[in-house]
Length: 267
Image (tube, rainbow, N blue to C red; front, side):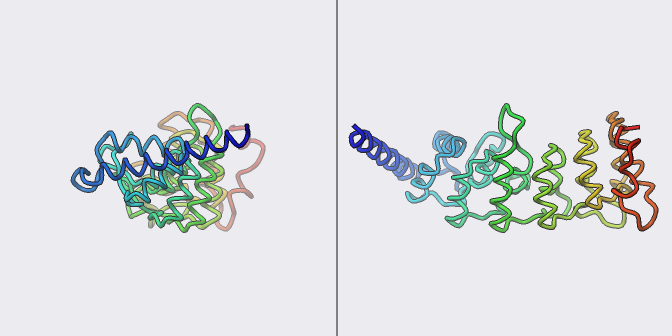
């Protein structure tokens, strides 16, 4: 019985691999301009990534699909790299395969998002857990993914702060992510991680960033500081932390000066 099952399983596996190779053979000559596959063929690859079918993706790559292929996918009609889609879905086996196959760990989506940004932002559908995406962050960091982004773009830490991904924030900060991104001389052209957390009212994310040395006095050119963003969006539970951080005496750290009972209670 067991031998029969294993024989059937092996047969199924071979058929699946052969089908994946056949898919690539069929579409290799009909890719759209710019190297994009047809919508139907791209859907097959995207679905395989979403269900973390690394064997299917591996067979496709062995069949001729470039490891850095960009395919039209949900949210990216202009095409996104396979590794970015794997990071977004926290498809860990697929992510590991693509990295091992030489995929560019910093390949960007059309809106200049890196795989690390997507892994740091998303969490499992319909669940509060982000364990798989946290692991995706760790995998990408170990593979040498860049902690920052091009100038005037959001960073992985900004994305993590916006969605209250505190464990991911911790990993990024431990690896040396710049807590204020590319802000300079008290000004920034794009929201800092602290501003992102303040806009969303993520109190503990705000606290984490302030403990890490985030500058609450940074202002968007022609716009707000983090505290002003918190006030604008009526996050009264966040404002006291930011107000205290703004008034830090020189040489004092946030944890020393602003972690008292009254502040902790949001008063």
